[in-house]
Amino acid sequence: MSLFDFTYLEGKDGELVVKELVTVDSHNGVSSYVFKRPYSWEDLSLFNVRLNEAIDHGCNWNDGFVPYSDLENVVHCEASSAVAVYCFGPLKKEFISSLINRTVIDITKLGCPPIADINLSTISYTFACHKSKLVCALRTAYSVAQWLHFYTVSLQYVSYPAQPTYH
Figure 1: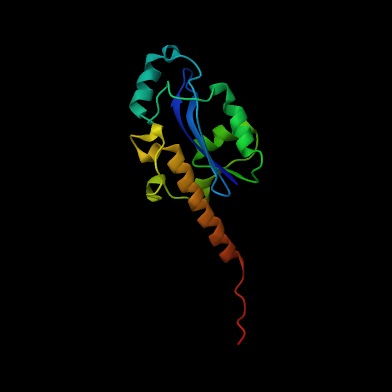
Figure 2: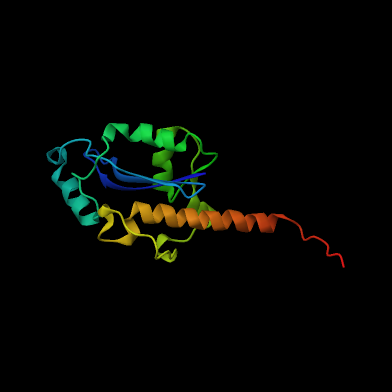
């Protein structure tokens, strides 16, 4: 299992520009990547500049350590050993699926509640998430991975028929 979440801004042609990408594997191993900008802020239209400022995903266009050109490779590497790949919501599902060219499961289709309803207060925020815990990719990915673990364990108990008791 590999669960992906990311925070993003809108690029010059309306495309998603991933700023922070987080993955959680089946052993709760967490990987976090903060990507550099793919091009200069000045290349954005005034509309997109204002839109990114208004949405306030908690990340800045100039933040990042990993070259943006490595995004697809990072996603491939993180998903390569996973039996199943999950994301929260259709937009993120479609984006990750387009990068790795394989099926990605939208965890909301499994009944995962909204992020605000998953309460894991022990999760700290990354530097990019200082304004809102609801847009923190690290917190979202880890919280949803915990929910998925609970979901899969509960399915194991539901799928086994009741066993007779012997006295």
